[in-house]
Length: 363
Image (cartoon, rainbow, N blue to C red; front, side, top):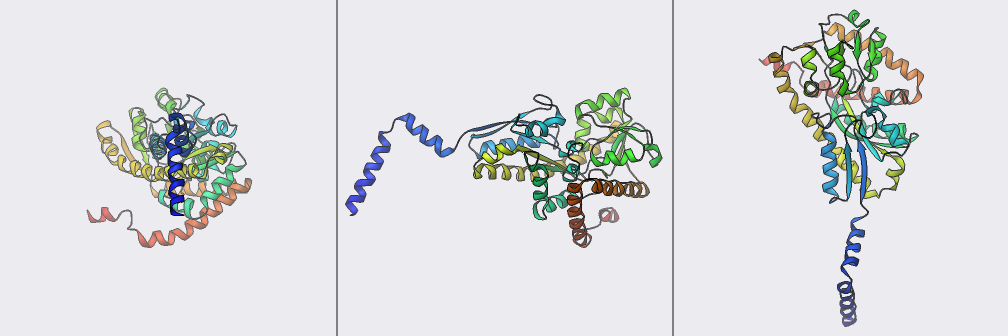
C-alpha cells in the first residue's frame, strides 16, 4: 500500500514537471486570482497633506498586499469627473470606485453629512467608535445601498479651522450678508444666520478670496489651507472647527463591482481602508503645530471664537439638525443613533480624560 502511494505521488510530481512553462504560469496566475484594475478619482488633490495624500497610502497598501494584482489607479480631481460628481459616476457604473467626502451628496442624499462631518458632533476617535462599534457602518451602508454604492470608511482627520476671514468677526450679526465658502450642515447653519453660502472646489477657493468673490472660507486643516495659500489673502484664522469636529473620507465602490469581488479581496479593501483611517488621523494631528507656529511670520492671527458665539452657533445647529430630521427618515435614524452614542460616551469622556486646559494650568 505504501509503495502504491509513493508511486502515485511520483507520477503526480512527474506530471507537474512535464507541464509547459505557459501552463505553469497559468496555474500560478489562477492561484493568485484575477488581476483587478479600478479607476479611482479623488475629490482632493493628492498633494494636500492628510486630506489628499491618504488615498495614496491606501492604494500602495492594496497593491503591496495583493502582490500587484489589485490596483486602485488614482486620478486627480477633475481628470475623469468633477470632484463633486464622483459618487454619481460610481453609482452609474461609469467608474469602479472613488475617494471622496460624502457630504458633497447632501443635495441628493440629505443624511450624508452625518457620516462625513457634523457641527458640534463627535471627535475623530469618538466617531470611529460609533462607526465601527455602535452601528454606524451598517447605517452608512444602508444609506447608500439604494444608490448602488458600497461605502468604506477610509480616512479621517481632526477638526478643520472655523474659517479664514478677511476681517475680524466679533458677533454672529456679521454673518448676515457674508459671502462665504462653506460645506455640509455648517453651511446650513450659516445660511440660517443670513450668510450667502457657496460651495466651490478647493482648487478654486484662493482665486475667489483674492478677487473678493467671497469674504471668507473654510476648507480643511491649517496645513492644507496654507498649502492652498489662504494665509496670503485672509489674515484672520478662526478656531475651533465647530462645523466639522471630524472629517471622514470614504472609498465608494460600485455595488455590482463590490459584490463581484472574492471575499478575500473585499477584506483586503476593508483592511487597507481601516489602516488608512488610523494613519490618516495620525498624520493630520502631527502636522498642525508647525503650521500654526509659522502664522506670526505671515501676519496671520489665530483667533478662538468666544464661548458665547459658540453657544449661539450650537443653538442654531440644533435647530437645523432637528429640522433635517423631520424632513428625512434616514437622517432621523442616523442622528438618533449618534445622539444615543454621544450621550453614553460623554459619561466616559468626562471621567477619563484630562481637561483640555489642564496643561495650560501647569504652565
